[in-house]
Image 1 (cartoon, rainbow, N blue to C red):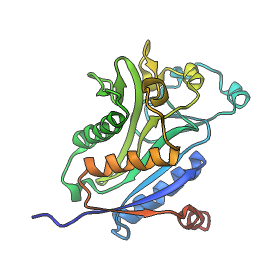
Image 2 (image 1 turned 120 degrees about the vertical axis):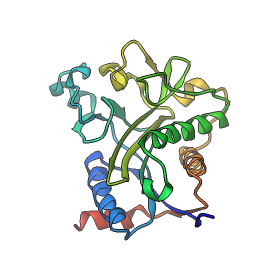
Image 3 (image 1 turned 120 degrees about the horizontal axis):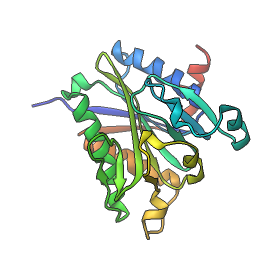
Length: 235
């Protein structure tokens, strides 16, 4: 019989992308040293394009010099996956968890991330599915609604998933999303006839689906983002 597993969830609101990277690095180190439990960051970013470690710059369809004109930043990361967009009205989850303690590998981890988004979409009557071969993420028909890009170091995860609630989809016109051409990007707002609740409620629902998919027994919500963000500023 396994021991009960606890997940600590930080609701951070809108966080600058670089700040979130530094925070993840800090938490990964602390999780490796077993100073913190499995941790999930729930947040949004200002308009930001990110590239994975493959550096597929050709999938950015706008000159970098033009990014400031559309109010967006560009950042290079060490996660897997291709180029993607993060912005307001998108639910982002960054898990800092030990795969070894859960007893799963990288493929199962990604599949479980997909399943959590599929389960969440079903709350609103949206029939989502995992991607076909070479198409990670979650799709509604041929339209992508959820993206995945992860990094795993010594069995500890970072980066994670992004689910489109109601972002400005025009930002996706400036990239080849996730390196997959001729595919549309969609959002929960576009795909459901249901009246959507507040984004805070939506984030909480996604977190709950995520925690259930990974079989956590206890979820501890942390409501004050200044505690973890200010501690990062002081490093």
